[in-house]
Length: 636
Image 1: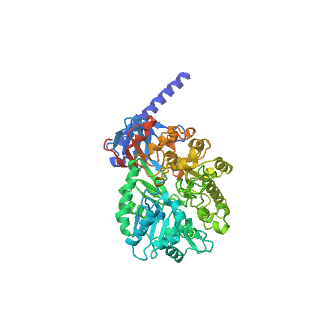
Image 2: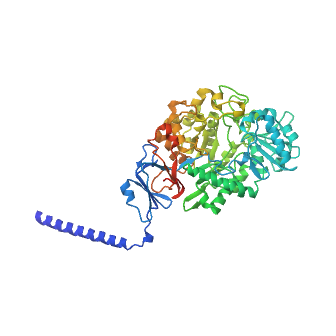
Image 3: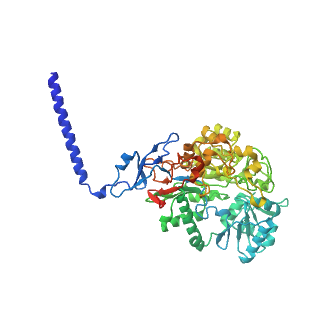
């Protein structure tokens, strides 16, 4: 019986192998008969490279080769298996050991398109203009008077953005009467910061006529109830949007569109494939026109946080008319090119060199009145520089006249914030408290947000901030943080005041070293990414940020907070995978995995092996967005 069974098994095995052979032969024959039009080979294959996939938060895969088909990553793997996929029209690129990375995502891209920050732009005669400045504050005023007298007619409105270094001086030496004297027949507004401005009587008259509530506590008044000229955040915002006219149509044609094309091409040239940040209504018009009229010039993706709630005393009215537009996109064969990823509100406080300073828990080491005459910074939402009130001092009626209330309204309607500018430690803590309370409302129209709350420009972290985050675990699921490393590694100067390194000058070396604590954030499990702003060759390009996160060497050659350095892989993730997470786009952007959008960059060297001292010299030689090459060096 044993021999018979063995014989039967042998016969069955032979028949089975013959059957499989016939099927395989038939399949090959059938495949040879398939029309070439039905076979879709990859359009691009990259091989023999150092492919940094960013496919996980730890120990991500470094592959040799990658294939792109249509607008997606088709396959990642070894040279042989990927090259095997090539078709007759596939472009095959030998990387020669160079790095290929996901496209970088910059979230401080407010001005990637003109009018991104038009709320405070200088503007008259239908065009945006440069900031107002001079060698002295008197020269700045004389320039203002000259412009009003020579470039307008009675009744024309003028909006000026005052250079930062003169903000504190202007708050002390200018008032409504100053502007009334130099511009008696013209409404004039001078933006001292994004949140505070100075208006003459004519400009305030226009605002009241447009519907600004006369009892709004952001209207500066003296002890007699007379208008001082100073306006807090929501009044400044109301005038900037409801009173300020849109630029002329010719500005869009002659200035905005060409500048947008140039700016987006600059992003592509530096390997940045997504620019996100708070953006205005005129910016959305520019983006729409580019998408429909000049699609090839929309070189990279732009993911705006609409700033319709930013410093807006009529937030509820806007939301009732708009509903929820989060995730609405303009899409072509590259995938979504313009996507609304949330709303934005105004910043809590200013930058280190603004008159409002960082809003901090601990006081400054040195108060320099010419820069910022306060110890802990001013809260812009409560117009503290004008009212003397912190956010905790406001009545419920006053609180409703701030962006604190706009965050509550936004969450009610299912809008997430993508731009709550904090910078200082108290600003971070107040912002967390705000979104936590917003999440507890019992009248939510949208029960769960589909994109996270994005806090950006966070630089100063102290134990009280970490404690609040730890004690409110719901924040871990809903909040993502952007950290501004550049402001620490390349401090700004107040040139006309002959003050260098404004952060260090006011907060001391101890204060400087607690800013941008990347390693600590990582160890505490706080989801963050490194912010990117307008890229350029000297700094702010992706490899510069990686270099600074790894070395912490500032522009003077000093190591700032050596214990806060990141390893190279983690720094790379903080500009790609984690930046995608900030805008809730990690399922499509920020890593190189099959099915992800084919946004990628080829560098002229190996990012993982280049000496850290020269890492910032590595540059892209090819940038791809959605499977389309948007930048390529001739030497590739």
